[in-house]
Image 1: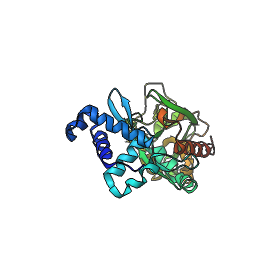
Image 2: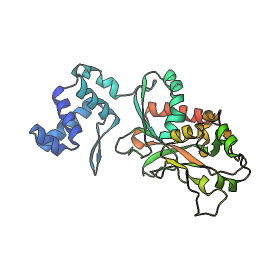
Image 3: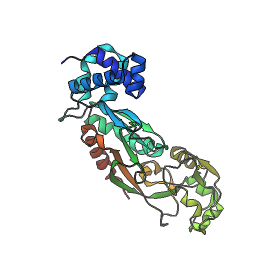
Image 4: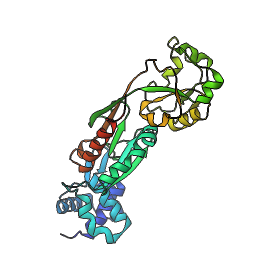
Length: 297
């Protein structure tokens, strides 16, 4: 059946207001009238448009698609039914992926071409932030986290165990001498992660390597970005411990204390329950697992 503009106008008001009551006030309709219109639209489309939470109404994946369409161009409304319902045979539509800045910029982004080539009807939005986005509030569809998920009610899959590599530029080591044991780090410049919401616990473990716990070395530079730490190492500024998923970026650097035992951290692929049957999520999960299986440890 064709989409009804009056119902879509009500839907858009509810989506923007986040409640039937506030939408009714803006439309000069009662709460029950607004609720009936939304229920009728959901029945007509055969998809849920809102999740009913104690905190209010939250758009479902289909609801977000519809709301964007209504907001942008009336002419696209005829395509909405197809955008709302995902094909069982072929993944299509927008997928919002969030992960830590370093992992997203240095490992994931360079590999996404392979995913897009295989699934050309999926549009990936990559949201890089060391502050975790709220999947339950639909800030993103899926996340790759460098620790077990803290949010309740998320489906999770362990996808990798990572370690660390301590590296320096050949020029730095030539000017400052080699290292034979962790205690020798006392005589070198360290580049560490600034203490602004680090994406991995114990990210600055190198400052205490070969030292008594609780007595870390002072860093020559702190920066809240793994790509910036890599560039600083490459410039000859000093030594850093960087995740081993960055191995492709270490070809021009020299391993430091390669026999030293390093901590490990776990990566998880997580998404909310309502995305369980999404074809986009399934194909992206399979892509991620396949690519991570190639990472040497």
